[in-house]
Image (cartoon, rainbow, N blue to C red; front, top):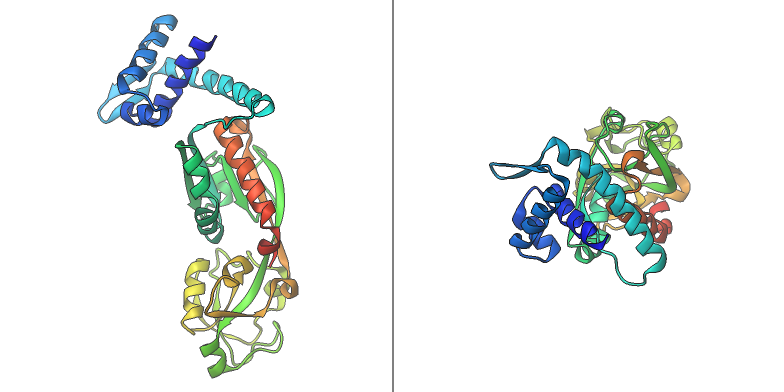
Length: 297
């Protein structure tokens, strides 16, 4: 059994990387060792598992069938280790995450450095601004979304409140003054949303916020709106996590006053039990939970 699993472990590394040298580096072995295990596995099964192509290795039809079975075996072994073993369990492969831009940047700064240093064979692909239709096409393993209606192929793991505040630079306030309430923005210059992202805001702001303001800039990028506000171009709505971290911006109306939106953590059912997905999901949920207060604003 141990020998068979070793063959599968080497098979998975090559299947995921498509490159013999990369697979060997992830496993901490020589390329010849990886190839020897693959040859043994193909000999045991009596079939070719890879086609060598220019630039790497591609799974054959039989290899694609074995991949699903091997990942199921990997998942069971990972679960056993998690429940009884005290030592650190390594995982490998790629996990695709979709997330709002501001959260993607925050995760890259606060979560990924430790996660990727502990799991050298793990790769995380982060995609921002993916529409809901992308989920139904099975383009993500994990997703962080504000949308309340989600494709049925995804499990809703948890929800976290995300606060939003209205922010402006001191130089802007000196020139244009400060709004007294979120509903009365006469004489103010607003950095607003474009049509694709205007729904990502608390209901109070969507229905009554920034009334009478002059819109000078629109963008679906929170990072761009933040940069523009820091340069004094106008006042803008930002996630509290982003606005509170800026030394150049002051919160006129914080999340506790404007309201919050629920952020849903979703996992694709088709990969929910894969060790690499479970690991990233669990670390992500724990990280969000530790920072609940900062997220809520």
